[in-house]
Image (cartoon, rainbow over all chains, first blue to last red):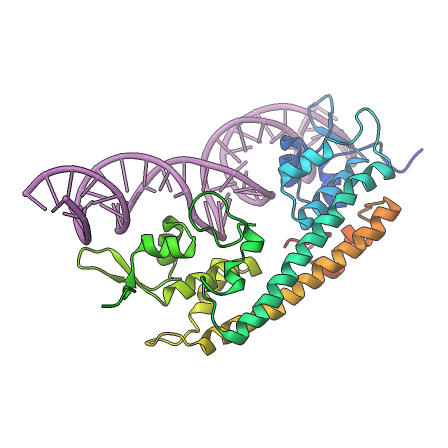
Length: 148
Length: 148
DNA sequence: CTGCAACCTGAAGTAAGGTTTAAGTCAACC
DNA sequence: GGTTGACTTAAACCTTACTTCAGGTTGCAG
């Protein structure tokens, strides 16, 4: 009766999410997606995985690695389909992360402005490239530049 | 008489820039750095390459690939040590690039805020993941998400 | 029941940006 | 002039995030 299938094949999930099937298989292998298998061993994705794929792609844009995303997704409740609240909870941390990144880029831009003024780019004197405030020392020896 | 050597060995350039010698060799191979050789075939970098390394690392933070950076550096005058003005000219373009990136992240953050509100993350309805304004269609089929 | 598109797997390939290793050379100090 | 640390190279390896390929299976329409 229903026009909407219970589950999606990988091709359908790919078409609806805009993410290549090969990428979805890759995510599946890394444990970012959950799927059942048909009797013939083909993946059958619950419709809720559509939202999971959306989460993954957005999180990537926020700058998370697939590893970090997997960790985040593991915080979702087991045994039931995540609610809006679950997704919202997961996403909330992004706000801070984005704010921090934006802040960093703004500082970089402003320092760039003053460095263009002086034309220096000196590693020893220029705030911009020295950037201890952005990088922080890591290990011995001078570690000037942001490793991001 | 002079305390300052005319040229730097790769180890010195590494120590002063905070960039690993292996990375400097890699940059050299890609044509991002210029160096002479000692009689025994060791690299000898003019002190001005210190500034070049600074440029490279900052440009990376701005989001440029090494290829793009090589292209930018190729705009420097040949045959003479670049002046402050030369560097400033090269750096000016970053300002725009940074502004654009900051703008993009701000939009992402703001959409994220409203999407957390609705908890949707729907690929079909949510501005955030749909994001045609950020991605633009590339090729046939739905291409929702930003590839950057 | 046949045919074909869609699916499966593992392995290899790609791209960027490097690091590591092996085997050998150079420079500098004593 | 010998030892030692810094340097040289090519080639292999690393990580992330995938794509592509080869060879084989499934699922559904006719």
